[in-house]
Image (cartoon, rainbow over all chains, first blue to last red):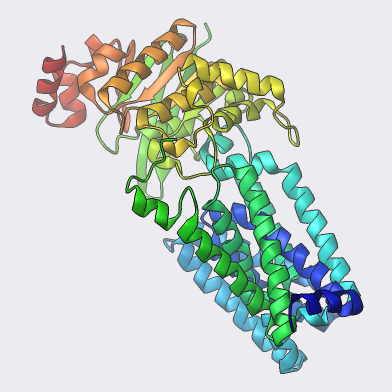
Length: 286
Length: 247
């Protein structure tokens, strides 16, 4: 089966269209928000918050409410808990992250095992984009629009708190508020990505396309668009492999993102490996 | 008279350690002020405390005659070079444009006028040719000049600089100090955390010698007295040789 067959299938199968729309949206929002995550040195935090969503999803099933309410609640509680532990003890931030997210994740696994079958747990952890329901697709689209809108509105604040948080605080901007705004968006993005890549691999969609874009440009605005584009390409190509060879959708998408990263890591005209070998000086003079 | 900085009974402590104790000081506007003192004397802490960046106790902290909250959009802070991620994907012009942010409300974006203003600020520090460079591609001295341009873009009346000459070659240091003098002559007040005592007398109109509390404050000739320096540093000898060499 080749690419043409895939396109043919796209026009025929409703489930595949939904899968495509959903994964493209996930590719875009993960790519956009991922830029801020990596520039703020918060990759581990991204991993933590995505895992911390699991108990919230379980509790929501238990209570019969929309699972993204529970997901945002436990995601944010974990973010607050990490801040609380690292600010009120000598425990360093990455250690606090390690303690709290694994606890939340472990709690989530136990709750899920009480509630649902192991195949459901498997889908939440690893995603199953070919089984996206219409309601999932609309929710992903809605979350995507909210997140993109928030980033558009707070672009200036996100930029200054990422680049020079001391100046931001000095002129009266609440860096903590921006931090928790970003954490909220992170939980939303994770929930939106549940079906596509799943909890475990969503961090790759946050970090890898953004890191790839970071190697290609020296401007934040371009980095954001490039990252969204790379996320989209990863999603579409990953979905093709997943559908054609019956592979796990999340894993396929992530490996495509990794392949793009590897290419750019070697060949990037500005910051690539070849460029460094050719001219040992780190700085460009052009 | 309105003071550029007016601090009364300022104390800062981290857990059990006292970083600053019962510190009172006033700076007249339109001066170039150096804050000196041994390592751990609380120089950077002092700057951060008067900007309201760290919890502090004080009976009065007033900047430019206002409370910190009212004054802070007119106060520019130039961080230590080590505090900035120089690989950040931002160009020189966009870094300067951040100086306009305090004046812009939430959800407002810099306009063309702001860009023109930012370019003129870059021109004043002699960095307009570098407007499109990524900030990490500049030398240490050029990076400091870009941050000075940002302070200009902010239209700040009070500038607080934390160790601006660290990692800067002698030539650039001269350029920067000339710029600071130019700004002072325009009536701005500039407070510089500085560790190289040898040039302190040359550079500053007023010196504040700190060691957790105020050791001495006044014109450099008054502050840089052997017995005063000994009080702050313990051992004055190595330092005094430096002062003599430069003067």
